[in-house]
Structures are given as C-alpha cells and as structure tokens.
Image (tube, rainbow over all chains, first blue to last red; front, top):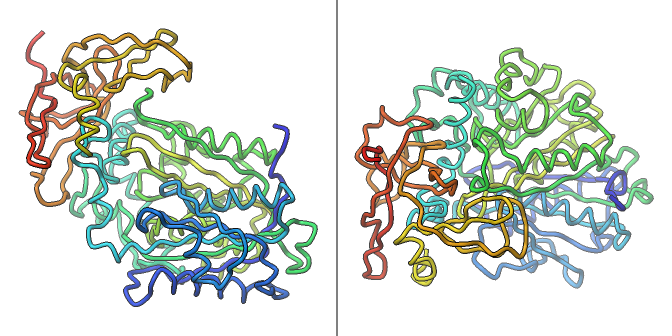
Length: 386
Length: 131
C-alpha cells in the first residue's frame, strides 16, 4: 500500500440525537440537531466557517438526493458537499471518504453527516425487498438475508437459538443504559426465543427496530487538531470490501467483513486481540455472532463462547456494543456507522457515561451493508485510537 | 423488478441456461457474463448450457412477515444447482419440518406473480423425487 490513512486523520468532535420514532422531526431537523450537538461538544469550540468540505450519508430519500440536503440543514453552502450511499454501511463509507480527502491533504477540516428518516415512508424497507424479482435475491427481505446465514451457521456448528439470543439480551441491557438508544428495555433469553418469528430462525427480538436518527463527526488533519481539542481520537485503520453469496461459500460468514478487517488491521498494525472495545453491526442477533468470527475475535463456530464467558459484556474484557448496538439503539441506515463512531469517540475519551468501559485505548467499528437485491454484503471496518 | 429485466433474462429463465467460466468453472445464472463474478477474470467467453433441474439447499428461512399478496409461512432457500450455479428460490410441496441444509430439490416451472397485466413464470423448488 503506497498510501495509508494511519494517523493521518483525527476526530475532534462528535454528536448525535436520541434515536427513535421521531415523527415530530424532519430529516433536516435531525441533521441540524446532531450538527449543533457536534459543534457544541468541540472542546475549544469551532466556527462553522472552519469547515472546508462535507460528506453526507443517507440512503432513503428519493432518487436524485444530493449534498444539498446537508447544506439546507446546516447552513453550510458554497463548499463541496458529497453525498454517499453504500446501503447500511453508508455512514461508515461516508466517514471513510471524508477521511481520504483529509489524509490526502486536500482539506484540513471536514464534516461527516449520517442521517436517515425511516418513518416518513409508509411502505417501509419491506417494500424495497424485491419480492417479485426473478432469481436474484428473489423474496429475500433483510431478515431473510441474515436468517439464511443464521440457519447455515447454526446447522454447521450446532449453535442453538438460545445461544444466539444472548446477543439480544446483552445489547438490550446496554441499550437500557444508553441515553441515545431507541429501545430502552431489558429482555431475557426466554423473551427472545418465544417471540413471534419474523423470518425463521429469527424472531422479533432478534431484529433491530425501524428508527429515525442522525449523527455527526468533525474530522481534521492531525497537525491542526490541537486548535480544537487536546484529546483527539486518531484513525488508525480503515477497510471496505464487497462479497456475494452467489460466488460460493457456506453462508456461515460474511467474507466482505473478513477482507475489510484484514485491510483495517494491516493499516493499523494491530491484531484483533489488541482491541479494547467494539461497535459491531448487529442488525440481527446472528449478525453480531458471526461477525465476532469474521473480525478475528473468535475461531469459526466459537462466537457463542464470547457471550457465555462474559468477554463481550459491558464489564468484560472486550465489551461489544456498549451503546446497545443496532438492536437497541436502532438502525437509521445512513446514521448507523457515524453513530457507532461517535460512541467510540466518547468511549476513547472517557465520556460515555453509564456505558463507559474501563480505560479503552483501541476501538473497532464494524458496519455491514446489504445491496444488489440482497445477494451479498458490503463490509466496512475502522480502528480508532487515542 | 421491471419487465425489461424479465425480457433480458427470458431465455435463461425459461430454459435454465447457465454460463460456465472457462477459468474457474463457476457458473453464472441467469445472466451471461464476460467478467467472472468469482475469479474476476475478464474478458472470458462463458459457454451457455442447459442445467439439470436439480440442486440442494445451501440454507433456508421461513418467511413469516411479508407484505400483502404473499402467503406465509413461505419457505425460501439459497439453492445450489448440481452444476454449481446459485439462486434464491421458493420451496413448494414440502412440509416445513422436512426442510434442512443439504435437502435435495428439483426445479419446477410455475406461475410466480402478475405484473403489468402479465403472468410471470419461473422456477420454484420442490423436494427431489425423480432422477
């Protein structure tokens, strides 16, 4: 690799809004609120005029949606605003693209916005699931795509629904403590396995809710980070890859995540055992479980042990999804990756309140997108450090 | 799904024509490709052939929550044809308890749905009874 993002970008501010069913707020309202929160939380303050370029990640709005939405929400006109979409990994790829420009030295200060208004669409995601397609992705909704991986994984390794349910139990516990989470309740293994099926083997509590939300990050060239804070967070590694289930494999892993993780760890010069805290994509319970293995935290088939031994609990050796993850916090597509990074920024600075893990130095963020008629996935991984 | 898409793949859809990569033997279905999705070789001359209507379930789900117009529970699987091509398919004429990874299935031409006043036909999969 001739160029690397390693330590070429710093995060100096982050903010988000409380996720939920926000009928009273428009997409523009949500972005404005997250933007103002991010500005107000820059330690030494920031003038909006310092922002030289912005990247805007959103999936849902109608075709032809542009960077203009970000400008309308923030008042940032007359500067470059690029809109990014990469399915559910949109927020992460938006951050990644902004980082590229800062690392290249083109801009010193950039804004990253991820937002999604999911409740203004009465049809919802299910109407976009291409149930009437011929062959490619035929009838495969989002729960079905991940359920297919669940069936294959549970079959190959003899993993039970009760073991998979431990992901939901853990994340709902964390979400009950996280002030920005959409769903703030606890549930038991019994609640999870007895809930109505959405797409067997996944029941209601195995699925993330439908959520509105927005999150914002402010990134800079490390050389000027001290204008804004004395405790910036560094981007150590970044990776992105795609894969298709039609290429082969037994559906017990997400190869896109494996390749993205390999890129990110190589760039960071770190191993999976050196991660202190992680936000892992848990759109469904099974997704987090399989991702432990794709990210190198467990050997294939051994993911459940991390839950059973408490390693990934809030007080464990490597807490995963202290924010409650997508299962509890919610999954507003374009906002998701950015919100994961906002959470880890706070964790690394010791500002995570009730869900603060003990003195983390290295954090990993992982986000999966499904695209192309649900025939495969996009995996994105970032590694951050103090 | 649009009618032009249906038209573009109409022959492969009706006859189960797959296209084999001469470099890695991966089979593209239903699209004819000149760049291989598995090995990335490009350009490649993929030769079309009629696939046997047999395959096995790589994995499956049972859909319980779908929009109006779909009967639930609806079993849905990723099928691997004997020749190696993969596709998503609906499972029919099968008890839910029978479904399992590795289950042998047989493709059968059926009505899929109506669109723009047209009846769309394609294959669904039933337990394999013939050889």
